[in-house]
Image (tube, rainbow, N blue to C red; front, side, top):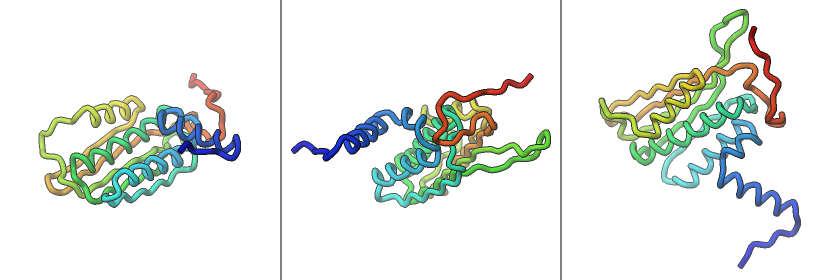
Length: 185
């Protein structure tokens, strides 16, 4: 039996959720990174109920720009999926937070940091990176960040992503997509 909606706003909300499910990239332009990451982690928990997925998202409720938000989203998606599928992890912890860096030019340089830890089988030494981890590393490096993977057989894996955050990139979730940019002279 088809689902019925009592009013147009409910139908509109349902259609928007459906569009976001089909195209998460569109959602990244509408909500904060913390909401985007939270939604993804809830979906992964729903998809893998046998895994203890522990999220900790501590960002300023901001968007960091489409490129950064989408990169973090894809890194979480790839990192958690790899831990479960390849590492056979029972427990996965995801930490996403902003951290002030060392002072340069009188101001602290913030970074966005993602840490994914699991208790799975780990990665054998000299194992080549697959397409997903290679793409993750390339996305992060394209933003001036770094992506490191630590692992030992039978000791799980740790994926650490650090991306510098510029003042231009950070916007509130309600700010329009088009931003004024100040070029350095």
